[in-house]
Image 1 (spheres, rainbow, N blue to C red):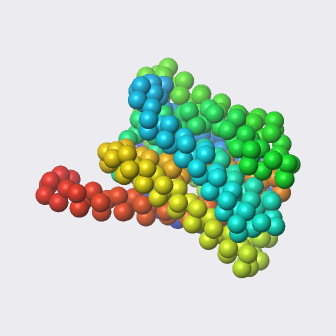
Image 2 (cartoon, helix red, strand yellow):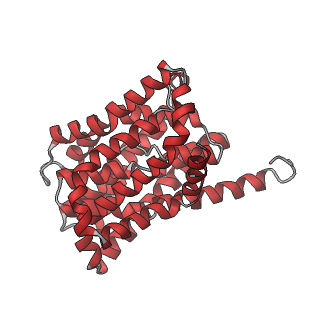
Amino acid sequence: MSGLSRINRTLERIMPLITPAAIAVGVLLDWRLRSFEHWVPWIFAFMTLVGSLKIGFADMLRVLTRPTKLIALMLILHIIMPLIGWGAGRLFFPDDPYLVTGYVLLFAIPTGVVSVVWVTIYSGNLALTLALILIDTLLSPLLVPATLHVLMGTAVPIETWSMMKGLLWMVVLPSLAGMLLNEWTRGNVNRTWGPPLAPFVKVGLFSVVAINGSTIASDLKHADARLLEIVLVTLATVVLGYLIGWGVSAWRRWSLEDSIAVQFNSGMRNLSAGAVLAIQYFPASVSLPVISGMLFQQLLAATFGYRISRSRRKSEPDSGRI
């Protein structure tokens, strides 16, 4: 167990590098990794199950008694950011409805379970984060197709029912299984199995990103000015998510603990799930905004985490606390 814990701590330290490295491996070994594409939903379901072992229904009930921050996050995640993605896609790529769809999908997918890691590291409101993940995950089979339909209409064919079944299988059912195990064992399952399984989740993340990266290897190998523009637009819109979370927290004068949770959950998405959806149900170009987001999602989380640490040190210069 101690060996696995050390491996997990090492992997957590290099989290900002895991997804860019996985994309590079996917591009270099594309012809070998494509044959493993059918494993991706299974790997992702395992990752979701393990990530959900720490979530309890009590976390949701505590937050629901004072739902202001939860409602604000849902509005940011599923109204403001999808509209920003749609607007950015229409502004920069008006002649390519598939890229516009990719930007809508980038922000229609639920918040990422990995945000728990960053909120925990920087002592944010974990209960709010867990409640958001639970509710956002359970609603994702409805919210994701609905957002795509509202913003894209008939511009792009959308396999609504297949997408809903995919989200149900990859995200909702494993999440419910993990939470029920947590409740049934009163948290013992997470304390017993969470730490030894944690490094395998990160290995699974690497595998999913690498396999998904292999499916668009030809686009990445022949990078041009258009691909660079896609990456820059993705970077700008994802940064906006963090800034909007920070701005809303400052405007509402929420505590630092709440602000940390709101910032990370506004900026992060379950990009692995988004990439699976994009690759399984749409042409390859739809996945470009989602997979380009993987290049810097963890790096941006580390950058904003560093800014949070500096703000905390400035606000408590003489506290003497560790």
